[in-house]
Length: 209
Ligand SMILES: [Mg+2]
Picture 1 (tube, rainbow, N blue to C red):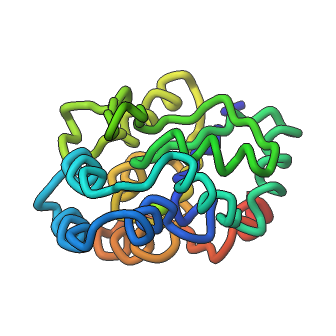
Picture 2: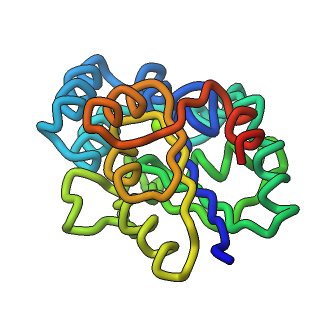
């Protein structure tokens, strides 16, 4: 019997808002919109976007974390997580964003997820430093190579369920076994002929599984 692993995007999938974009809107200089638009047109990589935008951020970690405390989880997230834990399905978050805010937001809800694949931010004197532990040169525009992680679970014998909403999920959707998509990911996968299931919130996903 093939075992299932469930991999979720974070921004806009686990949370109701895109946390990274909201941090930009709240704390970055006005040039963030140009960087975001260039990223959406695939003119700059996620690393370039993050580094350019964070250069304009003057807020402290504490100020940003005060904002993170207002972030809401998708209404079906806890049900989906418990469903996977009951069945012993490996459960992972794969994000083109930053592990710092993922752990922080989940921590507010007392949720600990051991498998989080995301980039690292270090708060250093007068600025920020970034590390990209899941970068892969096969996907040079992304800080976290989501399809590489999906394929790694498949190599270990799992049938991978992938859930996402954005541009950085398209490549993973192309290799996962079952894909749940909404918003931009839904449009982009339909345009590319990738078979997906549409979802509105994570209740839809766990009921369908
Ligand atoms: Mg997303």
